[in-house]
Length: 250
Image (cartoon, rainbow, N blue to C red):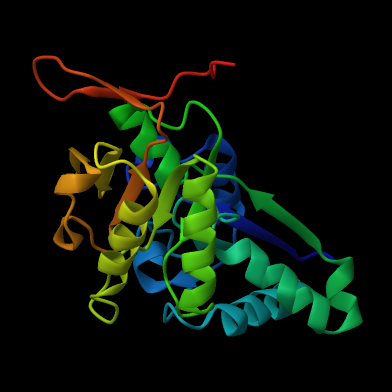
């Protein structure tokens, strides 16, 4: 087949954080598919065909991209951050698994990007410097009971955590439940980095202790980094540094 499909991460916002590999794929593409705000982040070429979709149409978007590639088009599906982290790569392979057999013969490449937790951690220092996990707090695709169980087990295991999609207009109470759960397991001085709109003009980084955290400190453009019990803060003029040591005492 002459068509191909690339699933590309556009990074957290700043064009400087888009990888050269992704830029090359975008330059070669005949078709661009994705959630409308992400498609609009890509600079214009008159011959590039754009397919903008709603955020909750992931499987339909994936099937459309695969059908175009099977028809000989050069297709890039775009996600923010990294396409393999709570994004489109998984949806594409789910569509391949359940779709027509000839889709399995397509050339499909996943092009990594800088995901929000890594961009946020870099701004703060090194809060993910030791063992950590990432948890998506949205209950659109999984039940809250499962989210709560994973949060509790991660806190009990003393992981640092990157929490995606903490709070939205349709889920105003979810992050309050998250903070209450963490307070049952973690010490009140556990450090939290609230990183909003990292690498954009609206960027805001705020470091607080768990006892002082409120739900309103997060929205859908925020990733919250919860430190482990070993995570430390270095006070200084300006923003502090937050880091988790790489060694754990015996």
